[in-house]
Length: 87
Image (cartoon, rainbow, N blue to C red; front, side, top):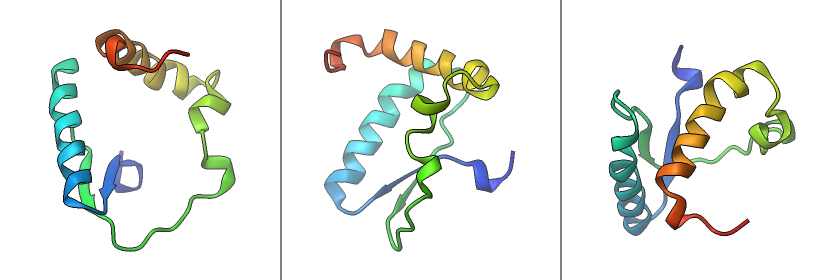
């Protein structure tokens, strides 16, 4: 809860904005609730501290990651299998 935890996609060009809108629209079918991720033009960029980088990959065993993020990742991978790069 709270604005400090909201998700956002920032774009620099009209093409990036259109791409983000297309992805968000195609992903909307995955959840019953609407996507509330903000789509905002980039103005000033402040890099996150290193411990925030690749948070899920580095902390996938933590409770929040297991209970909230992991099910969304599984659902996303299942739905978009054909579009994912081989691993």
